[in-house]
Image 1 (cartoon, rainbow, N blue to C red):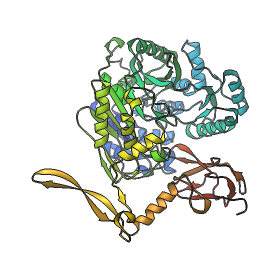
Image 2: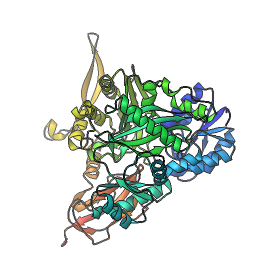
Image 3: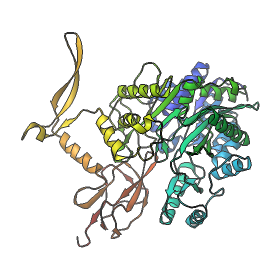
Length: 591
């Protein structure tokens, strides 16, 4: 390991820009890579130089390790930072970087390999005396093996991709008849997202807290922890809100789980920044779940309460330098929250919602930070994760930080696709969140979705019936005016173009639970068909899965809205579908 002067960041969007900022402060050159779909995007313009990593499918560009290493060599870069996602936890890519004579800004490939296999990691942690959740320590062969494990340790179980992370490849099993579908789905996601179809299962703990610990380890034998992050607020096993410190962790518990995290990192032979993810029960038991061998999306909240730049620490560790602080120097000051602002439709089960961002204005002020790679005029593509931005705030205590986040959310303007801005405001106002509880059952509730819709600041639309018979529809347009020196926002009613109502009806029809006219089942999203679970003429029940569509790295089940027979099935595996695509019709038996 040695110093270097230029770094290629093998990623895109906000994390690439985040890394570039630290590199500039260290007076290091910044090299970006981009797919065909990302030409001209913010992370490309933020770099000193940028290289296309096509041709080929844009969704796969950031997974082409050989092309990325070639770009680094052509640019004269001496190191590679992977960011998070894509190839960040790919041991083969890390070795490829090092074999090319470049410095890998991350943990040793052997540590990535060990912790990348959840089953191997569980075995290693158990041998090191680290508590693990009851379950398998070897991959499951098939659904029968899953049923056998359930007979041994009981339900509910959660099936996980052995090489997984980020909420991908995780399926809940509450009864025997769910085992086969869960096993197949987790296997499929593991193969697609991590090139590894192996899965395992463990006991599903009901309403625990998801508490993770940030660790730093250098090449000189020093391993420290930087406190915990509370990540319990999730949907589809993917985080939405993170905070530190956890409202459930006191100094004694923090020291105990911090020691567990440090021991886990030592057992893995770890170096760089990493995160020990665990589950905390109401009784105070803490179980190792997995280790993320990369910088986390939510590293930002730890930076705000510790005053450390974690990317800087990663870079210096990769240069062979010792950690800049010891465990005794770590102090957690105040409280920080992060809200992930995704392009998702809360009213329809957090459905991914790609689209054009027509207006974008970030909040500011004391204690407010925004990490984003999006600008007005950018397209949120179905090819990648739906995150638009990360909104992070810091203040002296949890309640003041909560209020600061509410203020910042209200200031944030994003127009175009639906976002989680209203959802986060509704959640942070909810009594369970104010009290620092887990909010179990609240996050995906209709009540919260309804409140989020109320807080959505999109201009309202007036239908013809609101204006009287025969009147053309209008919509509100906010205009700033001054009266006697005082500023006002005035809502003007402007007539819609003649095609707007037709477009709205078409959009609404596509969004209505997948049900169109005359029994049509429509795709509520743009994506790719991963599986078709019915055949022409099959009899289906309400809620029975017809097909599975992948959109923005999420699997979405399209279900039958009523009982009947499948008629005119029009999709097959691998087919691309658009919003409103007619999947089939569900008709009466005598139709």
